Length: 487
Image 1 (cartoon, rainbow, N blue to C red):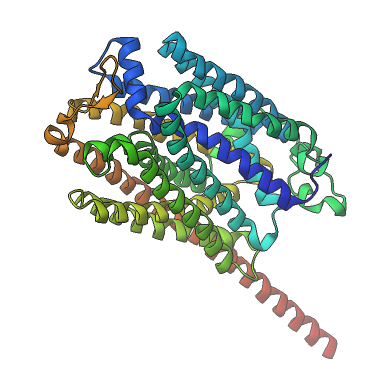
Image 2 (cartoon, rainbow, N blue to C red):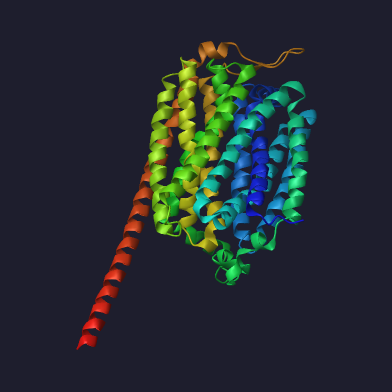
């Protein structure tokens, strides 16, 4: 059985992405239980949040490095075979994460998170390239947005999933169940992907029936370092990726410590926090990601094949959205004493932030040649994680320990783990300062994406001038030919 309909294949891959991001939400969805696990396993009650931050950081570090490696390999190997191989490792890694609980081993949990990052990477390399090259031309960016919406759905479901399983059956079962659920999808990636969608980039052909695939053909083999340098020489790629790193710093801060901060600020209680925060995230993602893609496609109607104009539109949209999101997010910190208003501002800010996902992908893909697009996705991921996801949870975790030292977990034999009741009373200002820092970091994205917009605009203007000059020369040539004929 093979899946030839591109819409069905896209739906399948979105389901895989949701499951992948459910795994990412298990730990932040159960902060009290994981804090207790670390306190009992390490005996260090003063740096618990830093240990949680390290779990997120080692996952992202492994994931980002593996993205580069698999992005390069996808140029010469079947991409969906790489994805299926990675997801097989991902299932093994989740089993290791689950075993960490009965063995009371923080180190084993950290090893599992590293392997999770490596296993997820090839799948995330393959998807944007598949969508950009095989989705309907007039809906390419919308499909990228729908794929981004699947990320939000998976993360939010992961919060609730992790919270409920940790509370009723144990967080280790959250990892076991997710691993088992991935099995049929791995089989489909190995066996059900047609060659049209699964050919290495250097196997492209000029046959008309494969015209969209043929645009991916690469030049003779270039070394890993040579390909890397060729991509990093693009100022547009660098400015877009640096802005995404600043964006990621804020997003991963919220994903890792958002529920714990909301509980500590007494905005939401422990029983409902993961569910409410998850609901806000999933609705914002489901609205924002597709809307961002839709608006790019809307502005590019009748010019779908004009890559320069599509790049300009995407860069312009990035700048407008990140500026608005930064202002709304900073304004939300002023409303922490009014929970409904605070949550409303957070929702609006998240919608605006999620609207940037597909325009950013467009900018990265169009900043390099088609042959290097997969590798560019991997390198941009490395940059955003090295400067965003990896330092963010460690920095925020350390600062949370320093600025909110009373927000630890209370572990009592025979009673459920619970948050220290002194947290809301004594550490309110410290938790607010964490929010100020996380949201102010978005200002770096405003600066770098301003530069990206200027570069994209100049590139578009240069292309338009070249077209105008060519048209003028053609008219002048025809006029001279006409004069000669009349003579």
